[in-house]
Image (cartoon, rainbow, N blue to C red):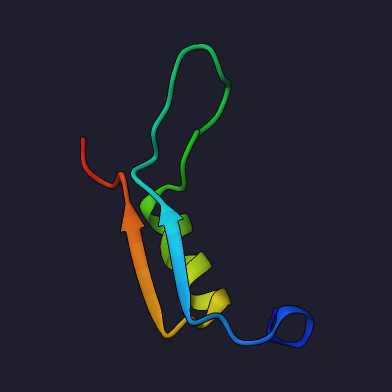
Length: 53
């Protein structure tokens, strides 16, 4: 990732594993996916959004 785009300073990750019966899958990252994305991006700061409810 760093080689292609450069260093990621802030990663804004939509988490919480939101679902709807209209879509077969998640609309946002699950907690596990958000943690994995943060690790892959190696961002200086990670801002999780929509992770409650």
